[in-house]
Length: 289
Image 1 (cartoon, one colour):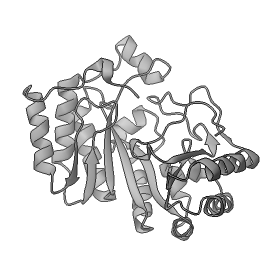
Image 2: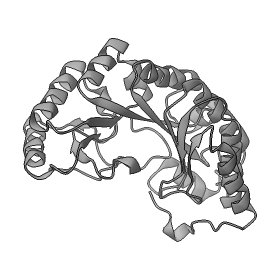
Image 3: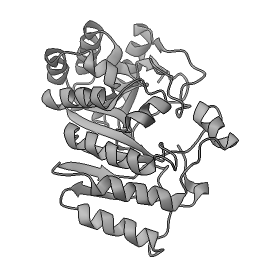
């Protein structure tokens, strides 16, 4: 496969065929993200994508999923996406699921009719980075979105009947906005009602604006206990939604998994036990992005 740069994919796509369609992120202004800082956004040539599909056709028969990388493949025109999905169906007829990252903006730019068309061609899952439901935090990290615009995007995916996986980022509000960040994020998730919620934990990177603010002391990163309190607040405020919930990302201090609302109490109990020292936390040297 012809990969350019670092390939980033969700944990649940570990066994998927990773087909890189774009390079980098079309937005690339978030102060906390260092994934694509040195890469200009580009759409890969169709000849390269076709060569990768030929490779997968020959060597990837044991994998029945395709994940489209990089940061925001959904930003491509509908015409181009339809052509790509049809190629996947022709080259890899055994594939039963196509997934991708979708920014809130690119989702809003698609009509329900267009999303339904992609669903009919195999689009099964969209991963969207909410990060926070707190407008103060979103503005601070230059996300380019508000709670309202995020809800509109997530609701559109759900209306189209496509599986919606949403990521949040514990610690993104720092110490000063920790509680507000958790509470407001839960409010947005309640309105969005995603099928899956993944809570990652902020790890500041040297090549980011936020990383430099942490180094200078202008942004105070919550300590592990404060992160767990934030997680407890987040889960406590999730109401009346049916969703998978997990903190299984490598950045997490406390790996958890469960289904809401069934496992809500057990998730909260695990956090309380970790805060009391009954469950060990993942040490910093083992945490990574």
